[in-house]
Image (cartoon, rainbow over all chains, first blue to last red; front, side, top):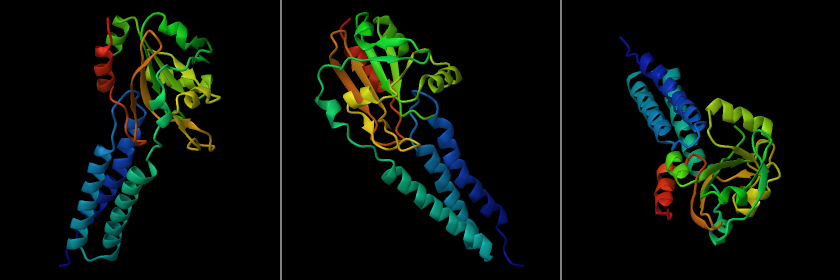
Length: 131
Length: 103
């Protein structure tokens, strides 16, 4: 009887999509230290499951899924280490004094840095935005 | 970290390029206890050299994620900057700098 590894193939696909999903869920939590490690772990597990499926099961669609797993992992790796690189903020490192500014906050109230500094230190947290 | 900051009379100010109506949604959804400042003209991120050109949805500039700790005299005490989009800054690093501040 030909060997079947349908379960492995399906699990591998689920893992390949769980990886980025977990990453996207974590990335919106402010001040959380999110790296891509959990996503990578899930996708590596998915690729491994795909390989297990492909070595056990000769059907074309199973092997196709394994290939897809590998492609998705490669794509994610490229995105993470290539495309996701941020430019070096060289100007920031040359600044000694913090440039003063006034900006509206989320309620529309203007907030001035120098005013806030009168009471104590200020931690400016720059977010990428576009949530 | 927020407790350490407020103990010293300090404040946390978040900066993003989103307009106030979007920022309000973010603050409410995440129950943020600090103000989210709206740098819609990108003037502040330019002044601080934290521009990631063209990476916004419509090709606009957005900020490079960073922590900038400023002391009472307006001097930049420490900075932590992401080298990759996926690297979120750990409050622990900033806390270490905060503890080195006098008072």
